[in-house]
Image (cartoon, rainbow, N blue to C red; front, side):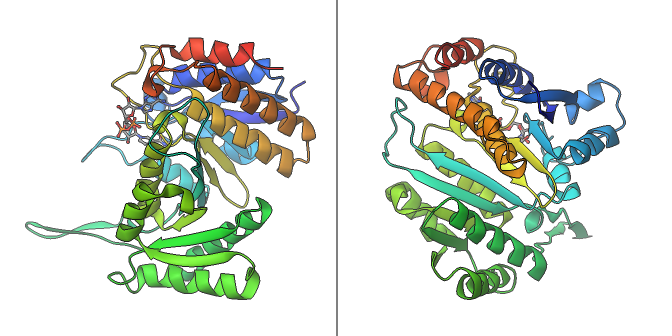
Length: 342
Ligand code: NAI
């Protein structure tokens, strides 16, 4: 029975095929959700909707509070502004959370990786404040507000407490960006000292942290980052556990939440049944856990658990897509998961 309505934005490129695969798994797992399809990005323009982020899409998310989103293409250099950045800012989805963990059956250089990147999602260099100063000189403004720094720090510590995680490491470059990164540092220290002294807290300069992440990633628990560092570190961390095909994500605000994989629209493999739907499927299980907590519905967590057990078993038995060294297509991997749902 569908108890929860969720907005589905299939997205561009590989988005529609991974969305189809995920929907079939959720149905097989008896997840109590019904999807209402809305459009954004190129898919919205193709349907002659007004703009890349139509009001109908935004108002549906505001109405239902939760969306599952596929990737949206952003033109490089010119063209329209990023739909993803716009969506996160318009709905004030200020916390991006990206869990990264080693998976059974997915062999990488590292074992025992189990960390979460928490990224400030609304400001920094993504504010899009760029100016042409004079011929040959342009600037991009990095914005940090005390309000946004404080709330993301608070969100990360609260998340750590709820998920029984022990340590937060703040990644920064406050030795150079003394005011902007410095503000996040100041706010995180305050939140730690005043509200969450039991969570271990430390700070690392982003360049040194990058080196440590590839040397010994299992030492990290939660990584708290401003917007740009979080974006880059998320992809780096995805590479530690098998790549973008298996890294989920969520963008969470006080009101609304949009769940989406870290990967993009992958135009190089779109429409070929090659994309790994696992990252979006894992994002969908995060969505089910969110619904379970927000709506106090244990049926959602049971469905999430059924799906997680099934994809862990599939991977453990060597059922993998090509990006993970297997041979399955998008649909075949989804079927392998469905076959293992209890
Ligand atoms: P990308 O993540 O789309 O692709 C990078 C590489 O990873 C490609 O070789 C691709 O084939 C592979 N890959 C990605 N997802 C995969 C999957 N599920 N299974 C197997 N292989 C996968 O990044 P790229 O090429 O930089 O961006 C393409 C477009 O996506 C751009 O327009 C970009 O702006 C957009 N994008 C959108 C995001 C979103 O909607 N949240 C996030 C990142 C990029």
